[in-house]
Image (tube, rainbow, N blue to C red; front, side):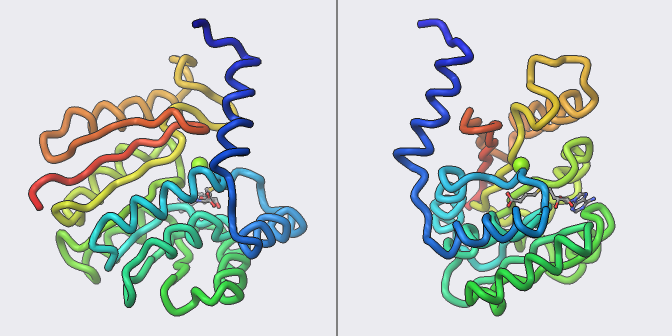
Length: 221
Ligand code: SAH
Ligand code: MG
């Protein structure tokens, strides 16, 4: 069976059709984000539900997201937290952060989700001091693709044994795909993928859903 562009597009539509159900309030968030001219680069519902399932399969006490945008993926992750669990999501653009805060408030998630404005590489060390080592049950990486290897380096000591590290766009993003071997983002994401996959501290897999999701479980629990 050969993969053709048509077959790949059909597959994407099929997955969206069968697995892409979402709460009406989440669909509204997406509509309002488009109205507010936020970039249309958020995950879809088929990935969102996967994030919820994965987050809920951990202790679900402390979660971290890099790259909030309008808060769509944060809303899904928050559904997977344990009662009293908390998500911190980092966003460099103050306009995106403010939009996401408003939306999460409307969804009734303001108490469990904190949107922190700042660049991930600046804020992660702050959070490491605040939260302490081995504190993160669930991480979703979706900020600057060039920085993925550095994110992994900084986050590794913060991962709880049994915690899950998930990364979006590990097979591609808007302007590159994993076969564009010379693209700088592709190079760094490839470095990240290989680093996680070869680490003895993680069991890793990659799902070619949408633009590719890496799922890695910190061993030792
Ligand atoms: N996770 C979101 C999409 C994130 S898009 C969702 O699926 O709903 C990537 C976001 O990362 C953008 O909002 C962008 O402003 C933000 N960003 C860019 N550089 C960043 C940085 N250095 N640190 C944190 N966020 C950054
Ligand atoms: Mg993404």
